[in-house]
Amino acid sequence: MNIRILIEFFAAALGTMAFALLFHVPRKYYPYCGLIGGCGWVCYELLLHVCSAPIATFFANVLVVFLSRLFAVRKSCPVTLFLISGIFPLVPGAGIYWTAYYLVTNELDLAGARGFLTLKIAVAIVLSILLVFELPQKVFSFWRKDRP
Amino acid sequence: MEDNREALDVAARAGEILLASGAEIFRVEETISRITQAYGVTSSDAFVLSSGIFLTAGSDREREFARVRHIPLCAARLDRVAAVNQLSREIVAGKHTPSQARERLDEIEKLPPKPRLHQILASGIGSACFCFLFGGDWMDSLASFFAGVLLYVYLLCLARGRLSKIASNISGGALVTLLGILLYQLGLGHHLGEMIIGSIIPLVPGVAFTTAIRDIADEDYIAGAVRMLDALLVTFCIAMGVGLVMMGYHHFIGGLVL
Image: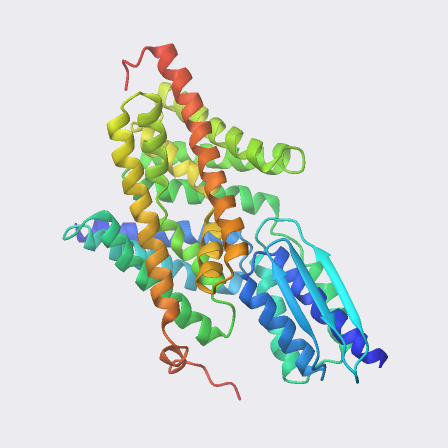
């Protein structure tokens, strides 16, 4: 189980770094993107044992946005650089697929359930981003790297 | 007097690059006002939408200046966002004259995109990783890798510049599903669903979605709504592409195999 989590951490980190490349993030920031993506996914996986997918997504994404802001302050660059690729492991791609799948196979109640679950996850992502961006900048600046 | 004009020009171009590269409205407005203030222009006022920038200046003491820029929605270039952000910090610190800053902006606009081969491989690796995360095994991830690679080959070499956003997302979703089914039928990969989920991830509109939320959080409702619509539309297009091919497959196979 522990090894599985470790492998998943690296898979999520690698996947996040791949997406960072697709969005043209400068190369020196790849490791941070990977770290954020990996942490977010592991947090999600661990929380999934104790609560539902939208709630797990919410807390995992709070971690992702928090780390993104922390690194953005540390590296004095826009938070978007870390946030966009870091969020990717939590984006409900599976939800989109299964909703479309159940729709065309005419299992409409399953499609409805999957669609609503996807929507809930999307709302969880929205709420977590809103929450962490309400925190004042001061919270993050303790870790600022003071330049000479 | 003339210097004023050049400073505003620099500010407008910095904002333009930021907006076209996928930055939030708030960042664009803040960058423009920081640059103009750093060059001592006090009367400037910028109004930014998701598809355009309106910048004017002028008072009793400062000359009139007005600029309207139309900016179409385009692909994310976060390297440019980072570079302009760095430049704006340096301008505020007083390190550049307006003409030097303009040269830097020229350089930033010429920043080359990542090589196509890297993008294609990244799409494959991303697909494989996410297929694995969503519960696929090694074989599924391998199949997903091929589907992701071919998806980006298709997007970069065939679709870009020729097809509209809607058409390229529907066809991208359809292509990935078709490849998934093909590889599944050939025996490469055991979970069709996970394979397809992995390889549609490169199409998912993460940038539009994230930026839309941040715009709405900053109360830039118009830009946020436009970007959210963009994200939703792309999502529906992907689902439609997947659904269409799935429908054909089920019709063909009789819905027995799955």
